[in-house]
Image (cartoon, rainbow, N blue to C red):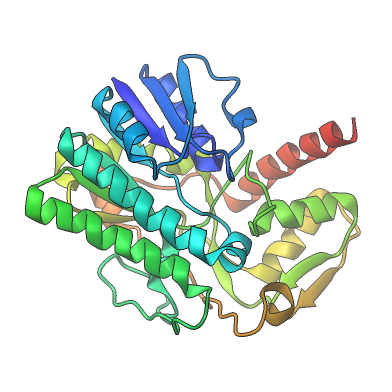
Length: 323
């Protein structure tokens, strides 16, 4: 098939493109390179890249018309960008998704939209299931604009399914990590790894007791085409990630040990990192029952193996930078 991946030059998008090419598909990428990097995909043959925005309706229409299915990954990513650029965050997420829904519906192209665990907000649930209630912070806090925009994306996608029977699948990603991810926009694991390899203190924001589940990109990406090719998945929302939980402080100390580093751990108040009024989720762990029942999904890569892969990738990039 001919497949379009928006945000295909990004971290997850580039791994998805690689997987789709391995499956024998012809892949088209739409990416404005605002956070993606052409270097992520330049090694891939059988791929065509268009440098433009998912908000450009004419470009999107031309691309969608000539493909069979679409994966929409283009969005603002990273806490730092969300805090620093709230207008672009909301417009990129909402208008980009609206454009993809309009044009894929026009040509009846199945569409998978990647959403985020952020949409669960400040809920104190131990584990999040897809139909759980959401608890959002005040609109005066920039930090919740991202979560709200991704929720609007989901509402709109499900409305297209209900009103127009447009074949769309929504996937909520939980902290996906692996090679090619950058710590530039607040991604914690590559940031910690780079600090540890350089012997710098690892800066843990908050008290470090907040917990997350980190999933290896190589486990997650193959699930995306399996969900989109399954007609019973249309109009459904799926959590996708790992259910192995760790606190951020424990993660930092684990990375120091696996890097063989002498780095220390330093705690930085949220206000110092992101400005006054910043709020964080204390827990973020997915219930994976729905995706497991749908396609038999199970994450198989341990956190230690994932960290070792990221450490090797960051070490290579540091060496290349120094060259």
